[in-house]
Length: 62
Image 1 (spheres, rainbow, N blue to C red):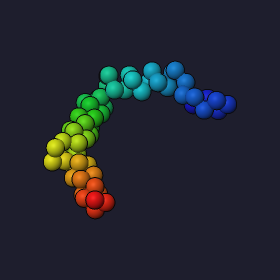
Image 2: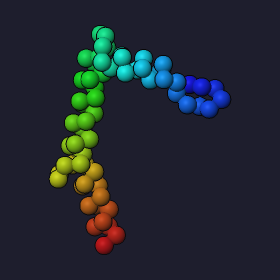
Image 3: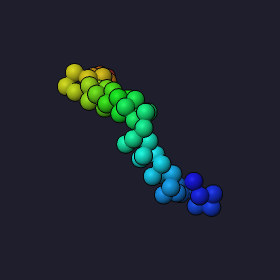
């Protein structure tokens, strides 16, 4: 990160992308991304926790 601007340097971005695309930890990173993606999809599904919480809130206000 550039100390003056607070902007992430291109070298750091390239290094992070390389870690995701290559190397031993790439499979673990991809597995975790898939796990988080699935969890978000479930929360937003018709019977998911996010919809249920919003529905419960709407019923309390109504």
